[in-house]
Image (cartoon, rainbow, N blue to C red; front, top):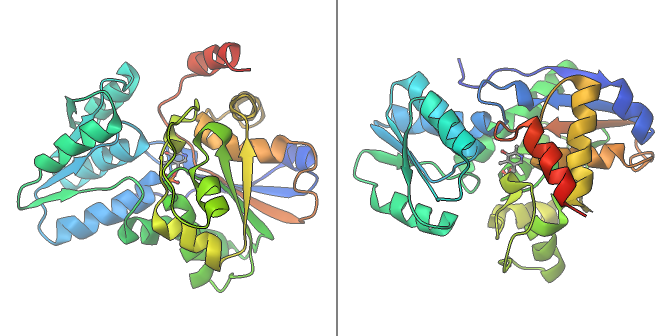
Length: 305
Ligand SMILES: *Cc1c(COP(=O)(O)O)cnc(C)c1O
């Protein structure tokens, strides 16, 4: 038994017609807490639980925090999530719904994270949102599930925030003997931390984040993400906030699933006419996300250029 579920893999007719290849969707949006994060976070929490952890601490007001809250509830381990004042009421509500203790502190994630670190006693486990080999090993299971169906894609499209999903997917490709399958790593222009690191050839920290795709908002990617870019065929793709938001709206109509702009970014690549036409079969990781509402997506669409 794992905390995450095996998700559906479906062919998308609308996305296939838009992109000019056969598009396969790995529907991580239907994980119990709404995103792929449960794969890695669930695995990390199980390992810490087995080692005797009695309290989980997270500093993510987004999907990573939700996954920790869910995992803690399922394992019977109390969870504290420290979030900055900027966290939406909805995100705090979702965390409390899972039974987590929510502590609001500071004006930025850095400040919330600093407090979270001071809460760690012996017997507590801190669960990082993207930079931990335990997470990557858990995320890799999504590629194992695809391989088990017998479908080998010609490329994988995914969104990149801190690069945990990327690191896990590359681990999954490697452990299934698919080192030749390229990854299209998608970011919004206002949160392009992997793109900046690849351009510079070394890890860099963005001065600021400016994107509605808050789940992609890591100023600096995990070193492992840059390793993936060096050792695995990888193409960087940047999309606008508008394209990510429009992809969310279209995907809701096409597949009746509401995802965050962070996920819309990856979908936008398929909706951009014929962007993927050089491939036959493309796998899109529909990473999901629970924090956006349709009203918010429509509001954002009025605000962005
Ligand atoms: C966390 C998250 C991402 C980015 O994942 P990283 O591992 O940080 O690169 C993308 N989409 C959603 C919905 C997320 O929750």
